[in-house]
Amino acid sequence: MNISVLGCGRWGAFIAWYLNKIGHSVMTWGLEDAPQFIELKETRNNGMLTFPDSLEISSDLELAVSRAEVIVISISCQALRSFLADVKKFDLTGKSFVLCMKGIEENTGYRLTQVVKDVLGDVPVAVWVGPGHPQNFVNGIPNCMVIDSDNDELKRKLVNEFSSELIRFYFGTDLIGSEVGAAAKNVIGIAAGMLDGFGYGCLKGALMSRGTREVGRLIKAMGGNEISAYGLCHLGDYEATLFSQYSQNRMFGEKFIKGESYSKLAEGVATSRALVSLSQMEQYNVDMPIVYCVDQILSKKISPEEALSQLFLRSIKDEF
Figure 1 (cartoon, one colour):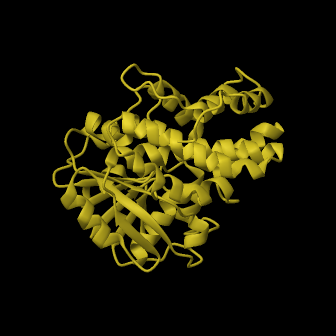
Figure 2 (cartoon, helix red, strand yellow; figure 1 turned 90 degrees about the vertical axis):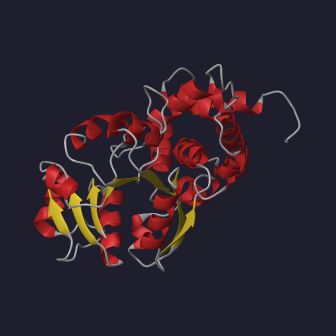
């Protein structure tokens, strides 16, 4: 299968390396002036993995799009709409898209597959979500992930083509739940980092339980299956997001509480704002106290100490 991976950051580079490793013809694309692209182009190494000679590297977007049967996109989710406007300039006949990022578009509240449909029309599109860090995968440590789509033929084709001993893929059965759950876990990851910053790591058990519950409520209100919050897209990704040294969202939350700067991308920041907006829409009206507190802390509308106190002083009620 001819595949182009658009985006060569930490995750995008791994995806290109992985798909090439299991036998596909792969080209990775990046902006020619981006530090990650320059490093890969010059050394074929990004400090984590080495590209073999069989893996093509290019900054020519038209070439990357035209050669591919399947186009994998791995960029910042808030940049997706503007990036797709560039992709739309080329002939997309017969091409399928796979989104390998997790988030909700902040300005619209759209799930990322909705953004694709809004810009490109009715193209086949899937999401690749679930737990796992490139640092572990390149060391041969396996994990389980999910591919979901409203196009059943595409979903089954991708699972069959992308599965290996390193990644076992499951068929997703709830696109709304898969997307919302995957996006929301980054917000819960920030909350976990905040607890680490306070030295309250013992509260992560409660965070996992209650965070999953409120995300499930939102998924159900949006028309999905709330049980998806307990699957690989969300709860199944908690170890990699709430505890791992490699989790950028967790690390961002910890650094934020400690008043230290953190320059790497934490998608959960914009997603927290998007989820608060979604939860407060009249048609959903879902109580999401943890997500709300994360957003309030990040926007500096409330102190972290006060937010924690408010969560514990909420009215007493049944757990379920």
